Image (tube, rainbow, N blue to C red; front, side, top):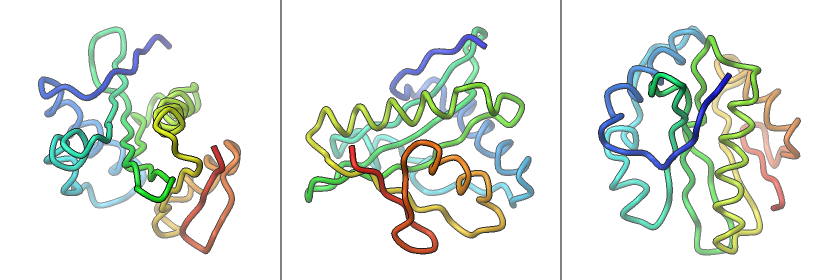
Length: 145
């Protein structure tokens, strides 16, 4: 699979929203949108944070991830989604690495992630430990960068 990861651009808004809704639906979740996906500039770019999208060879959004930098030396991951039909091909790992490199490059020493409930976020609970994340409680994980 050929893909490229770029900072989010407004021209991809509708395709991003479609991909996220499709990914949630494939997991059996009610496909809703979080507020940050409707205002990526306000939740990420205007604060000095970043949000990336992965594009396939047809310039379609196939994945995304956001990262907020916290003042106390940590960062938080948000909205790591991969198009359902493209999972387990390295795209999620590449998006995660992009966010971790951004955090490291901005002096953050810890990356945090909130997993959500155990039933609908079962894939996250398997994915993050493979990348060095450890539980801090039932729904949160961290990794030292």
